[in-house]
Image 1 (cartoon, rainbow, N blue to C red):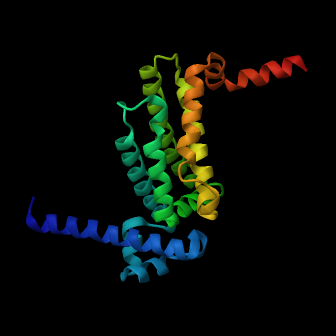
Image 2 (tube, rainbow, N blue to C red):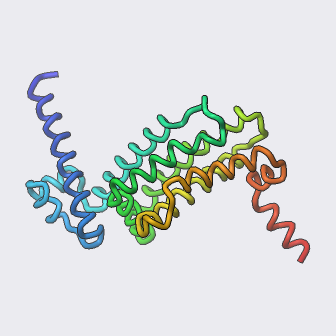
Image 3 (tube, rainbow, N blue to C red):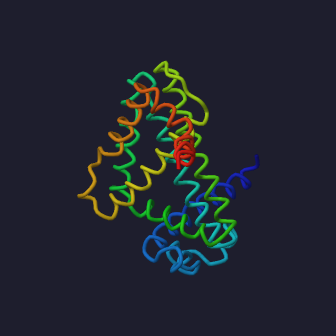
Length: 225
């Protein structure tokens, strides 16, 4: 590759990173709805044209920020998943690290929540949000499937996916409470709750069936009524 082409590519990547860093600070300070591309350009020390040239819109800039955030989270969680550890203890490392990151950088998590709120009003943003959500869900479902194999307990794709949804719900829900009121949530609670769930499902056939098909219980109740 000619040197000039390499230099331009390197400069473009550096400018993109600079804009993303600036956008993260601006969105944290003003919220997504209150921030403007002018604010981002000023924070980055660049022109508004540079923002448009790299991202095209404020929505695209938010998506790019969240894609990087979620990609980093996925890579870290995959690296912390240890198949040599006892199955019900496996959530501890990843869960503890998730809470540590909330404490270290709460603004990144707040921006994820803003992304969710914006996605509720914008179909294109909703589609992009769901892509990120599905990547997380698929990763946690894979963890669940591997742990079921290692524990020697019957499992199905539905069971693994349901466990992944519970993991997502607890992670995001406890994250909201932890960021809003840190003293009310133990940093170890998320990992402990997931461990209790895993241990129960591994030991109890009825609980495994509940995880496989939770709607069956509702259907039985409806028939009794």
